[in-house]
Length: 321
Image (cartoon, rainbow, N blue to C red; front, top):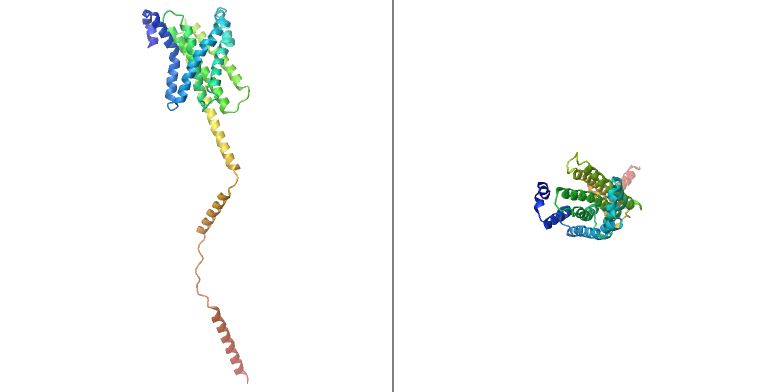
């Protein structure tokens, strides 16, 4: 609605106070939208929602009191803009990107990394986006604040910066979360930081290149370029998170199997297993058949033998002459 009003020209009749309010609105709107999305995504995690909001606020405040004075007064960044496009890219790579990404990294490193707030790998990118959008809010506000009128360019500039910083902050958060939940080499975090700084310079070089072609491209070509690059970055980041989660589950399954194999035998378990085996064998063995005839007593056998011997003796005496 705000962008549509800017195109139709009605903000030109607004007072200076209303124009400033609109500038602040377009600068902080991306961060508020992300915090709302985060609240819907983590409905049951009240602590996580509070931490994301604090990261956004703290990053914006620290950027305003630390990074911005360094860029404006110490490095005098405005003087670089008149040297050509190559000086703009060089200043972004050597000065702007390292200072801005270092601020986001330090806030994540000492804000959520040591505690129990970061419980999953996906929490790193979520908190990283929230922190980076705090820096993007101040950068966008500084870019649109000098304008006396509210124009569509203000909305486009805020959108471009929000998309770029959100994508870069997500990678910093992912690197910290992976470093916490898995074993990484010592050069991993410095390497990711250097990669994010390079992507920062490349990202906005491409966006400025799209603006340079404004005579042959639509006015919103820079925003479209930023959206495409951010979507590619988020898609790659989601794939990495899913791959690492799958690898973690596979490793946990292998560890559980190894523990089962190395578990010492239990005496009670062996006794129960033997009892079950005997009961099973007893159930399978049929009972012995009953005897066919009773066995005569032993006394009757002796009398019969004595009787036969006596009869044989009598028969022998009768046969003698």
